[in-house]
Length: 492
Ligand code: FAD
Ligand code: E1W
Image (cartoon, rainbow, N blue to C red; front, side, top):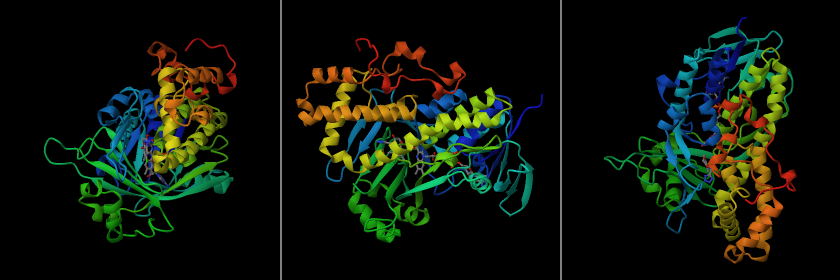
């Protein structure tokens, strides 16, 4: 039997991962990537230089056999270090202990690791080849190189992992409308840098944290690199009244603003002016499609299917989950791609819709609620409930970041938990006045137990489904939903 051929557009993070997973399952995979080989040229200026890797992404890398190597290239981030304008910075832990941390990893380093592994699994990469056209009737594609030289290629089964500006998506949409909806978020971003320090100290600020400077209508963040430098990202409205990228078009205008609004950050960036003037303003949008595929001929995954904002650090993590699910479905139904694609969308779309919504909420929360007393009261009470009844309450951030429960479950559960906190704080606005015994009793009477979670009970780790053990897409498991609230439940 000949191996089924797959033509993959885009050799970025998701493309390189899905290529390797498919090759290991017996497919013959060819990848066409617009850019040059990242193993030869290093990172591209202006692209995000590092990314936060969380449990979902890590789990996909475990499936690919690459988790250990990825972690070796990463810096552990234990929590968010919040830098208010008029007070000292403080560290808020993300999870309960060092089992619940996220990892800062270089985009080009991770991409190179994934490409190496895909090649080792038999994948062929063609770099500097940009998809120019795709004819879904004749099942042929046209590619151009950097000199404009055009070549054609047969493509029976097309997979698009070519990112938010997907060329395959445009070609598919021209052939048969996909129902594309783009919601610009109105904010843009600029990449800056805190260089490594000379000597043994290396890190100019706390290395094991994601630093946030929340400023209501805008913010900056910084994430560590193993070399000792930090990538700084300024998020700001694109247009409108000061401050926006319109009113801060260049370093001459921006440096006074930056010195005033980020007084502990500005002095750490000796190349502020150079970086500000030479790096482009990135734009951010949420992308929704009614359809991710054209029968069994072409399918999209990752940002090409559902680009989201960066404010939860889940875009890559979500795309990595896609890669595992799509591979499992294609491998299980080798000759019936249309069914596999349909099932892929059915499983994944509710989850990508949920993380898109949670990402937006997180931006608003981070930007301006860190100082809101009611928000802080809810956060504090939630922490207490999670400590006292860990099988009944887990803050939504932890559900998203440290579990493999479907995003749609995290979204629903988060909503139910939030309603409960609102109810508890209605009578006693100060969390310290809430009777915790009574609150726990209400919690257990209102919400079903959480599904078994490693971080809550190590003995239940064996019950935690992993795609490796189960050989099934992870999101297919029926996790206890909120509808089963009346179910019998044990005593915590
Ligand atoms: P991409 O990484 O965009 O890869 C697409 C690939 O396709 C590229 O290599 C591109 O060159 C190629 N390509 C494009 N067009 C063509 C063409 N015509 N022909 C051939 N190839 C083509 N996610 C996280 O999980 N954690 C984070 O901390 C995080 N931080 C972020 C910060 C910012 C500022 C932004 C903007 C995003 C962030 N994300 C984060 C999201 C993450 O970057 C994306 O979700 C992820 O890169 C998606 O991977 P992808 O492979 O689908 O797309
Ligand atoms: C994470 C680009 C980016 C990446 C991230 C996060 C944020 C803010 C941003 C969300 C978060 C890791 N977050 N929320 N509170 N602290 N961090 O968790 O990846 Cl802007």
